[in-house]
Structure formats: structure tokens, C-alpha cells
Amino acid sequence: MDRPVSSQIAMPQALSPSVCRTFRVAARVMSPDAAPSTEDGWLECELLIARRLADLPANRRRQMLGFVRALPALAAALTGRRFARLSAVQVLALLHRLEASPVAALRRGVWGLRTLVFAGVYGRPETAIATGWRPHDGGWEGRAAERVRTTPGGSPSPLRLLP
Image 1 (cartoon, rainbow, N blue to C red):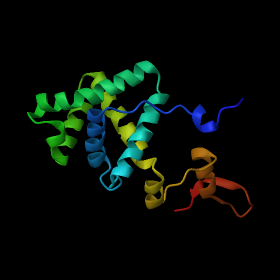
Image 2 (cartoon, rainbow, N blue to C red):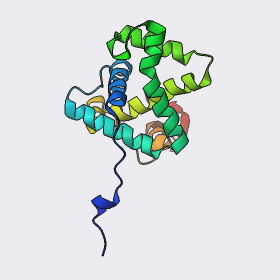
Image 3 (tube, rainbow, N blue to C red):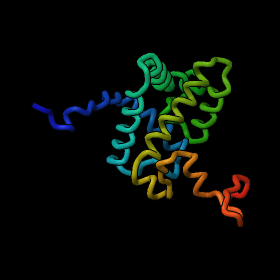
């Protein structure tokens, strides 16, 4: 007997409350105009992030979550304040400092955090509608092909893009 489709879809492991707090602080700073404004929006964002993490190989998922868990301690050590208590300017300064670190794991952690935050924030249908973003079946190549103007002879010229 076949199981219903919904039971075949594996739900990602829920993120811990401390990890969610760190993601929320980062999202408010990294994309202030698109960050969710409701608790339901935040839960949807966190579910998208959890799904994205679940898609990563186990070692990369551990590294990413390790960085996110370490971020409050890094903030305390480098600024003397808790991560959640930092102003937006201080969070940005901390992330820029870590991004410029000679330690590759810290640089990769910042970029991984940014990628996950953007996936969660901009992956929500509400944000996509508000920003006018829509995916294209043909990917980036399909989107570019839409914008190519044809020459008078009918052949496309990749150098003549519409504004």
C-alpha cells in the first residue's frame, strides 16, 4: 500500500532556539527591508533555512551550524556584548571583521550565514511578490534570453540588452 505523499517528504530537523535567534538578528541586519515582520513569517523563514541545511552534506551542515552557534561567543569576545544585544551597525561591523579574518573558516562562515539568511528571507513567497522576483524555468540563461533584443534581420544580438 502506498503511503500519502506528505508522509514521504522528510521534514528537516528543527533549528534550536539559540540558532534561530542568531539567524533572526543576522536577517534583520543583512536584509532589513525583506526580513519577516510576523512570527509566522519568521517560522517560515526558519523552515526554509532548515531545509537548506538539510540539503547540505553532513560535514558542511556541522560547520555551518558550528559557526552560527559560535557567533554569540565571538561577538562577546570581540565586542564585549551579546550578539542579540548589538546594534545593526555593530553586527555589520562584526560580520565584516569576521569576513576579513585570516581564518578561512570564519570567512566561509559569514558567507554561509549570508547564503542561508537570503535563502530563508527571499525564498518566502511573500517576499518574492513584494520584491517582484520570480524564477525563470530556463534559469539565468532563460532570463537573459528574454531580455535580448533581436536585430532587424531577426537574429538575436547578445550585446543589445534591453534596459
